[in-house]
Image (cartoon, rainbow, N blue to C red; front, side, top):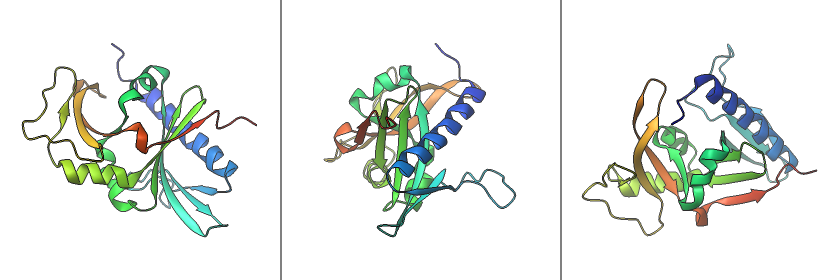
Amino acid sequence: MAKFNLSRSNAFDEKGKKLAFKFFSKRGGLPSINDKDDNDNHDYSKTDIKVFFPEKNITIFVEAEVKSERNWEFISSGVDIPIRKIKYALKHEKNGLFFMVKNDELEVLLIPMKLFTMAFNDCGDDYIGQGSVLTSTNFSMPEHGCHRVRKFCNTVNRRGIEDFIRIPLRHVYRYYNPFKE
């Protein structure tokens, strides 16, 4: 079992931001860093990137991340987003996206933040257990299929239980070879 590696995680975060810049720039957007304060300190209350589309006069807010090939294998049943990212979805429900890119850069997923808040609101504290974690007794799958999942994960200091929101692939925008010239 692979241990959590903070420096690798930080490198993946930076790579995710750079690739999100590239992705949205190719599509007519004007991305800018959104998660730094005036002193260039990280502001965890804000999404990574803000993208302005001048032709449509709209701004979207993007939380970006890279997934390793090993973790990418597990998206066949849906995309898991850590519950701690609810702060972004609540703030940018109508104009926010989660951007996920495979480490080899051959695939990008865009997940509307409104799906995250739908699952969060419809499931409350109830969840599907994964692996050795049991499903909560009152869990009922919402009609849209977006739901809460609880599973064991590697964390900074230990292996522990974490909660995620799982978005079925039918709700996800998928791009293959998105950086091909």
